[in-house]
Length: 358
Image 1 (cartoon, rainbow, N blue to C red):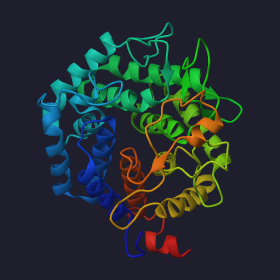
Image 2 (image 1 turned 90 degrees about the vertical axis):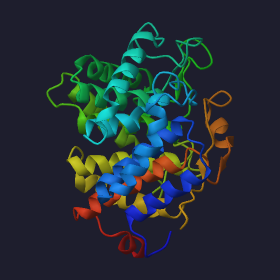
Image 3 (image 1 turned 120 degrees about the vertical axis):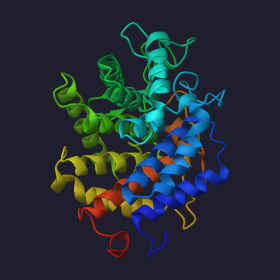
Image 4 (image 1 turned 180 degrees about the vertical axis):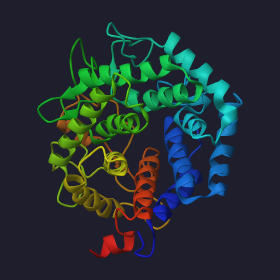
């Protein structure tokens, strides 16, 4: 990344690059649009907000028949997190009826296991994976707040806490990707960085936007802080995280690193984590992540789509391929650098050029 660029410019370049190669038919598109909408609000760009709203119109109009991902038919094909975030911020009021209908469909019809966790699919209701929480928890929270639907908010908290209980490793303080992936009660043994990032993204959004008087708030906050502790313990000397987080000899993985940095930045923004403890690792991480983003917004070293490969061991995750501009790469980078831009604007971190020279 150029020494002359600022955090917001990095995020904008990643958005423009994503638009150049994506068909906008997957959950990755929802992630990228949500990040770009945030960026538009942070930098005060009505043009960027209009760009995102334009990308969302086919989703809201029911013109997108199929979107990849387990929640494609119930959440993603209607705009998911991106439309819900714009709605709750007062930037897309026309999305309200569609978001409510989508949330009702999800809560009423989606398969669950015996503990109420959403399963991966109708065919695999007991297959629980951390990827779920990023796709449904913020969406339900924001839709619930915008529509004054406490049931949606409660469902958001329930899903986050149930998944945390099922997938959190209390020793390493990180998430396993999945439970029951290979048999009853079996956890994928390794700790995949993007999976941990998915969990942290959801936790960060709930900590930020869940009303503090909600009875689940303190549990959500505790879970968020627990996982961040596990991330600090596994950050490498360049500020990044690896594909298998407990294995520094596995490759550096950019999308998971970006999601973790977003979650740290969000906590620094709202004061829910200790600034003295987290600011140094955060800035080191931004410096490290910058090395994996080119001047045209291309992103290197993002793991390709990954669902409990092999037996879910460290070796299995480490062998899973990464590539330039995998569709999973852009959204996390947009999230991370847009949050950094907001912190820079408030004087909480130095400009990117200064950071890169340090």
